Length: 278
Image (tube, rainbow, N blue to C red; front, side, top):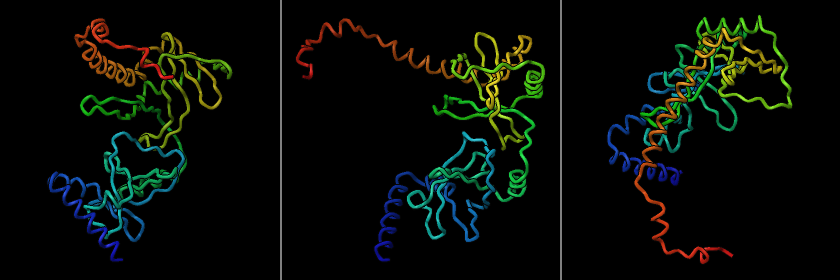
């Protein structure tokens, strides 16, 4: 017991030394990221309490703006929460706290919304909308983010009409099909919390295809729907374009260095035979 107490004291001293350098803002940030397990199995972070949600295979809360939090027992001081706490994530809107350690995924929901969302997870999955997820490079933070796009009524109705009016063709499972761009379209609830991957939207040489995930049926989208299907892919394509432009400028600046590689090699007196490893 004395050894454990000494270790905690040492860790606390080290943490205090670090904070003396980084200042009060660092301590405030640690407080905001520190949660506590309660006796009744909930988690408290600040004044908010989080209750565990029932499991649901379709539950897919929006991600991409999550932050790290560290959950400890109530006897662990804030200064040691990062060292002694269990790592969790908290959503950007601070509605969900979750972990996926060791292959197990479980979620907690803020108490004021728990009953509503738990009821949705315990009920039947009745999707009413479509959405997809794409990657976005944020040039301000230089970090990749995950974003969700939910189809408009016009876009959603166009997908339904294609499925209802166009004859699907079975794809050869041994053949390779190419595309210029592709998104995985998920059937989802209106709040996008429950999702199921149902289709792919592919575009190749300006022709769009709606491909079912379960049986590989491909629906060739009539040209009259090209504009609306183009608008579905637009957020993803705009993100890809912005990323290429950003890195294009970066690499252009990098390779614009005034280096004469011919002079570089001519001036170096290198015997490459001596460099061979035998």
